[in-house]
Image 1 (cartoon, rainbow, N blue to C red):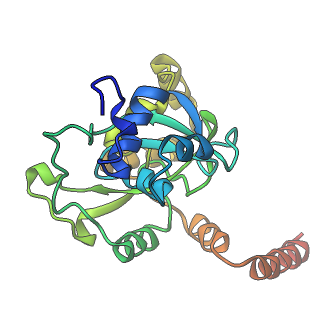
Image 2: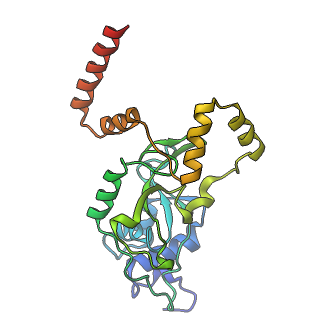
Image 3: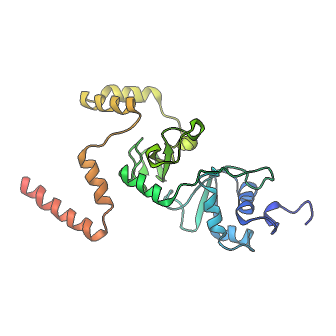
Length: 238
């Protein structure tokens, strides 16, 4: 292979490394790419789509699909952030960071399948980021850098925006003066509730919101039964 041949074209390297190099050099942060483009670039590797998904998580890449952004088609992805440069010879993947699917499920279920920081649920659109939908992930209560373990009790559910490595995704900054003005306008009970959330750095949820989250997890037929029940109850009380 000549010195001018791009790394991502060299079949001697693994699919994930080549795909990462292609994304970094040919696509770039903030740009979209299609699955077909990826498969055309890395033609001699099967399941290259899965290898790209592997870049997320411990390798630090942020790649959106149609579940995250309403303006993306099922064939499109958006490269939000280039993470670890996995194609470099000196790169060594972090060890001991793998978290099983069962642990993810256990923590998500415990936290009501929503971000404990801002309260958004998976797939919901951010109020301040039109078209951007929440993806849930795990955050450490005690960071690994301070000897925090990958144990369910040391995890909490966070969305990608509230998760520390992804806070740059919030786009336009918050209007600080407007925030303070709106806080002053809140009823006293809401001020007290917000003060508690800020003090604990965690949002708490009333029972009605817990029931809402449980309803969202039901199959469609069961949702309809609950909807009919609520219609009957609200009519009877009016």
